[in-house]
Image (cartoon, rainbow, N blue to C red; front, side, top):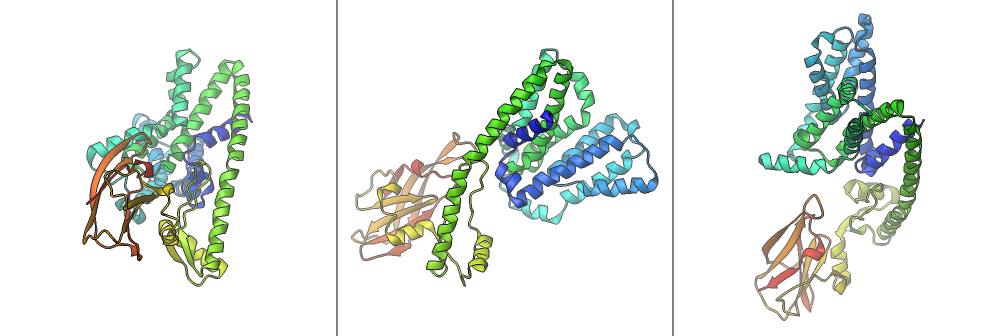
Length: 415
């Protein structure tokens, strides 16, 4: 019971982006439940590979293995692990093993070469990174995302240094699982380079190996039982705090959703579109995409929905032009105001300033994968047509990249 509780809690805290791997229906189907299918195959493969059943039973194992291949990361990792294992133990490839191995290899091939994968790869920003340096950069950044994997490595090597576990014996006992872990790291970091949520399979295998390490420690040290009980209790308290802390974020998103519904009803479909930022690791931000709007139309009887960017709503209502959104500028005539909302720079120029072609330069910091890694960018943009105009001023809007932080747009010039 203690092992089961600890496994669940470790996986909970180490899982990458829990809101996408546990709660999001599409994400949990793709990663959580496909990992379950992979583990079912591993269980039956390790249990029955050395036995020799009748032909009808072998056929059942063949088709079952093919169906349990799951998604790309897990299937490719297990296939690679099995291939490496039998490369050094070819004499053990007998009985049920060939049927299960071939079936799983076919399932893996179907999963990898499905037509939809190539469409997605063509638009994947990670795959699009150029050359060897792009691969190396992604691989280095990926190492920082592993949690259960690093925890397993630290516990195993600490125990081996203290003489509690024999590394050679542990590796011999858990060969296929260790191969799975290594292949999944390679598949994630170098070959596929998928979103962070795809780490779920890797972290699950690392959690299993961690528990097997702790099991070996318990068998050699009775004090470990007490340590595990205390650790499980601490993790349970942390889990409770984690769950309680998400309720304010959920309430904020519920209020935003309710306000959106009221706006839809009141404005006959005109609604300000905005992303609701979520700072809790267990709560998904509400992304109001096309599908969401269509479902809202059906549910609330709105004949049409006109999606209007939030900054546009603020400009039209006059709320944008406050110090709250002001960008820190230099060398600007005081009549010209520059503001920023999320990814958009808004420039307000009085009509008294005549110019056929307005240009402005700005310097910004673009944040990369980690918040402390940023690069500077300077650009000059020609503004030929205003977004809107009044009797007093013209308004220009320039959309920047998603990695721009408003506070970092700290240099703007006008000419």
